[in-house]
Length: 150
Image 1: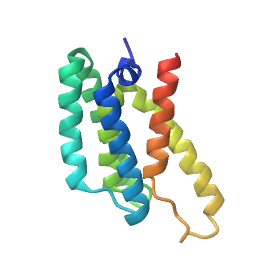
Image 2: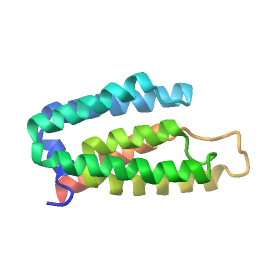
Image 3: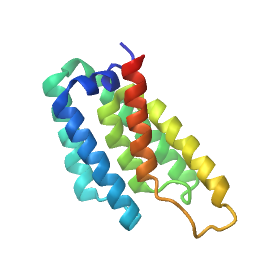
Image 4: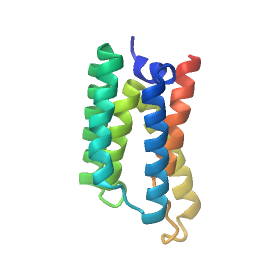
């Protein structure tokens, strides 16, 4: 069923714990350095695929399509408007989509709305920008909760 990967994440303790630890680490590191670490994102992507394939092989295709779509969409934004989205954000969103599947669309929407609201609040002072990591992680958590309740 459409969006089952996000719903099933709550019922799979291995994937859920890895998702929570990874998301927390990415958000924390992104706040401190304003960057996403490739050395974390690469293994995290491999682990997400392995955990999904071992527990829910029927959801693997959904997660791979969602991650690919997320990557292509955000990469397109990065090419058109590099100041808006960096490559680290593109890769981090794709890794989160490997866990969430189609639920990542909801998470991207929530993170985008939060980003626009914050951008409107700080537009007078461009030096006050916020890293996207925390918004992406909180939006992903909200999307997982919404998928579980639906």
